[in-house]
Every structure is written in structure tokens, then in C-alpha cells.
Length: 99
Image 1: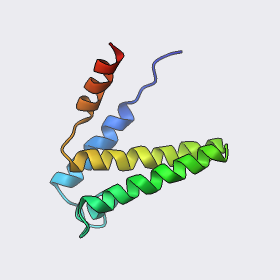
Image 2: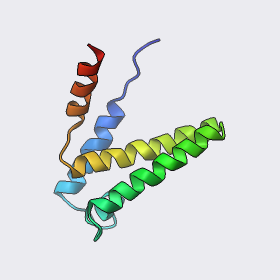
Image 3: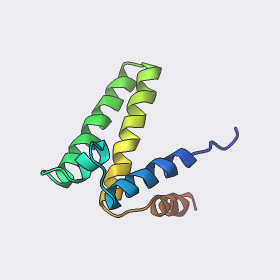
Image 4: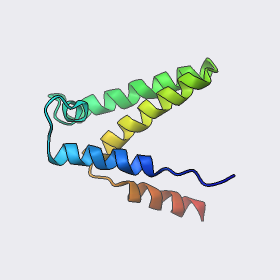
């Protein structure tokens, strides 16, 4: 099985960081990062998308699993960016666990 190119995650994360550093009007990412509820709004979205992913898997709907998993990963990236955690830190954690 060939390695999957996951560079799109880096691209999306970079865009999120760009929005964090240079807010853009009408940006969904900015609306999450600058929400009056603060981090709680982002965490609500992570939770919502996690539940939707679980339900898609329970319903055994492949297309829905893929769609909801992408939503979950996206909102997880927003949370990581909000907390100042880079993807390289997550990659390092995976490497530690693999040993």
C-alpha cells in the first residue's frame, strides 16, 4: 500500500494559521477563531463533527463517513491552530508512539 500524500492537511493548516494571523472578513475560520464564546465555539464544532462522524460510521454510509471525517479533521486543525499546536508536534507524538 503506497503512502498517502497528506500534504493537503499542511495546506489547510497553513491557511488556518494565515487567517489567525491576518483575519479576513467573511472567513469561516475567522468567525470560529474570533467567536465571542472563544475556544468553546471551536470545541463545540469538534464535538458536533465527532458525533456526526460516529453516526455516519454507525449507519455504514461510506460517503457520509468520508464527508464527516473531513469536517472533523478540519475543525480539529482549527482547534490546534487556536491552541498554537503545530502539525509537526502531532507527527512527533505519532513517532514516539510507534517506537
